[in-house]
Length: 307
Image 1 (spheres, rainbow, N blue to C red):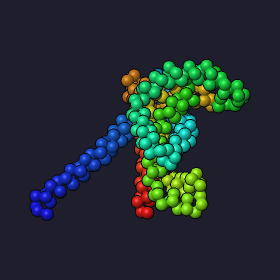
Image 2 (cartoon, helix red, strand yellow):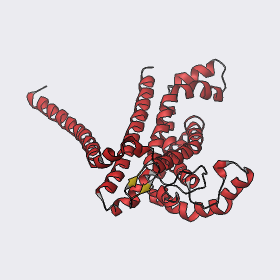
Image 3 (cartoon, rainbow, N blue to C red):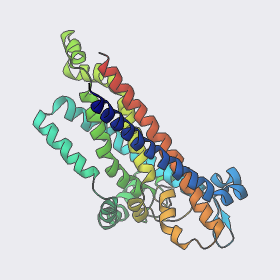
Image 4 (cartoon, rainbow, N blue to C red):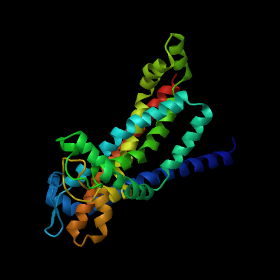
């Protein structure tokens, strides 16, 4: 290799390193800016900020507990609905569906994942909210009398509605990643199970799924990260009331929604700092969850390539 080729190779390597360093630097700058801007709130409230339920900008009292509660509850509802459906569809596309149907469905799911969240919010407001208010919530309340999760008036907007919208939004992520993870399982694993007398479903349940379990966990964590950080669709259907309620019918609030709704109205330094601290908490949560998801997917890929 001549000197010119070596020089070009070195320049290309340095350029690639620089691009990667830029991403890390931007992430560090973002985290640093959130940390510095939230200093006033962190100093005044400390850890109590995450445990206090009072949100009163007029009195200068800020607690993020209702927003943290709303974010976790809606994300949990979304995962309870989306995980069984998403994993089931992934198994069908990867193991049972014809290749052409699997490829077409995979492309469609990628398109669904690219739909702007405000579109899901509009559909939720115009279709899901009236349906929840008129039929689903009264029906759940009738079927489960006295059950605290399904009690209270049926507003249509609330934790349950926001969770359903989030479930629809994250299913494409679970299916897309789950399908790729299942397809990465070596064919020899399936053939060995079938050769030992296992049925097709037994090979999927006892061989393929255990082998792909870390990657499927990664898909679920990626979906959780999307659900935690979702803003517009949740803002439009959750009700935007900073309260902690046991009933899933009750209106609530999420961390992303309160930032979107109130950031432009923050008139004091403490008010602005409190909102930025909510953003810092959300940033840390999503970064930790996405990092865990990536590590699980990488672990599955390495396991597949080693065989």
